[in-house]
Length: 256
Image (tube, rainbow, N blue to C red):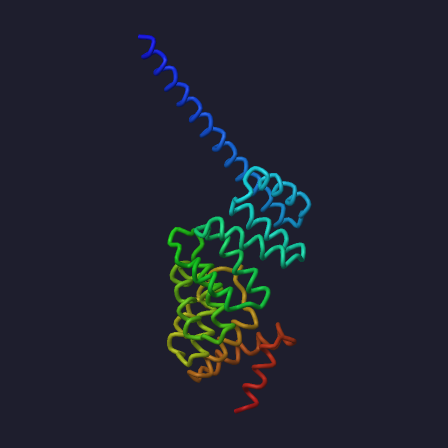
């Protein structure tokens, strides 16, 4: 009888210790998550000192947390510490290769450093995560990287996927239209550009940029739509006379 009681007591004790450990780990993980969220908000506001304090606390609790390491890398990058930022990004990915947000941040960092091939590789890896909530932006960034590497066909494929996932986000529609023009596929470019023009007509928040105007001009010229070309060219000249795109337009018409 005594043996049975002892066994029951020991078993109960083990369960209590296990539950307690689980509770402590859960509390720690929640605390780290909260610190990282606060730090990320402070980084976006430019309050790097407050962000740093929260991230130091998060990393004290969990030194290998991928989210905390990635946020620290963002902070270090914002502070001009590129070498430290890269070290933190690599630690984050090494700690958790499935932390897609960290790969996206790292890809953006590499792109900003002009390391387009490495950025492309990070975005390509991130794009494979079908559960990532903002895959459209990942494919857009992938397209930008491919363009920088002069891989126009790969850029078109990435931008097209971004359009599909975002259901026609304006920047993706414009990028896809522009790269299709570059490839000489004016029919497809015109189709996507028409969707962009419709969005602009329906929503006053969306306005023409020099890039969108020049893209529309190139499409209109190809199809000999002179009135449309003149209208877009007038907007480009009046609204963006100092832009690179206006200078490109002047070169375009001087070659006729």
